[in-house]
Length: 427
Image (cartoon, rainbow, N blue to C red; front, side):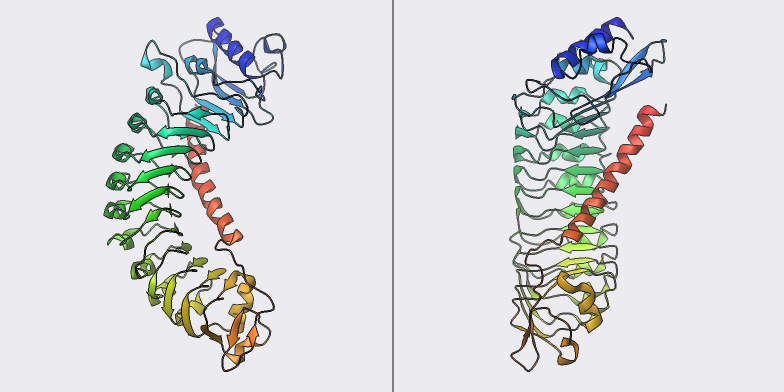
């Protein structure tokens, strides 16, 4: 190794971890015979030296972090570093993300992936100087205690493929400069305290596949420009203050498989356009004040596995075609004002079992010919007998459906991470 690079590395390790006396136990950290855990090295293109290309801290078998560890800004001076990970590392001593004043911007140009996850003592703002890491493709700052506004400078990182700022304490509006991230595939700003509206510039991000703004304080409509997101697979907007109309071009989102928008004060009829999203697997719009009937077009969603419409103001009958949805495994229509005969045969009812919730719809009843051997919590038509020995789920979320959603997200994220890993380490 270059002696100055090795010295920088030893200083970082001495400040971060007490697992070893690093200088003595691993005097040649890049040598294969004595390399330490959590480090990867690559040969330089213009010299015969080995250079640090990746560092991992905080999760076994990588080095653990001292309780007194603070963020090591020196790490950004390692000239060949491509990937940097801190997982559950800063847990007790409060610290901030800090970047050194670089003598030249190119000194930080090699870093492609920066991940700081689950660091409860990582506080303060996201520094605007993070824009100097202009080769970043993946930026993950999730499950920390970062506060303040999202710096607009972050949107000058034109190479970003994934941006995850979820589970922090971020406030203020989502900057309209977001639309400049034309290469972004995954965006997660969920579980913060962001306010204002969803910027119309979201429609400029034509490669976007995952879009999660859940659990904030966002208001207004979903912008019409969202119809341009032809690659969108997953959209989650639950637990905000969104209301009003849906975009007129909603039906153009033909790649959409997951639409999750529970807990918003919509107070409109359910849009027929949902029934034109033929790849839709999960549709969750519970507790949002929807009125009117359930559109019959929903019966065309042959790939639908989860439909959550509970705790709205829906009236009329359950569409006849719902009983033919062969992939459905979780259906929650509870706490509405639905009426009429339940259009499901005993085979359908037994297949869904406890994943079917029709409760708290006093006008619904089950045909006597289908009631034998099923227990779903609605009256048998023409009697006062309720088949309710086995109660359906009370909660809006089906565990299996949630797991499936997370699996998709992991698939999207992991696919891009593996692609980046190939770029970074196969050369």
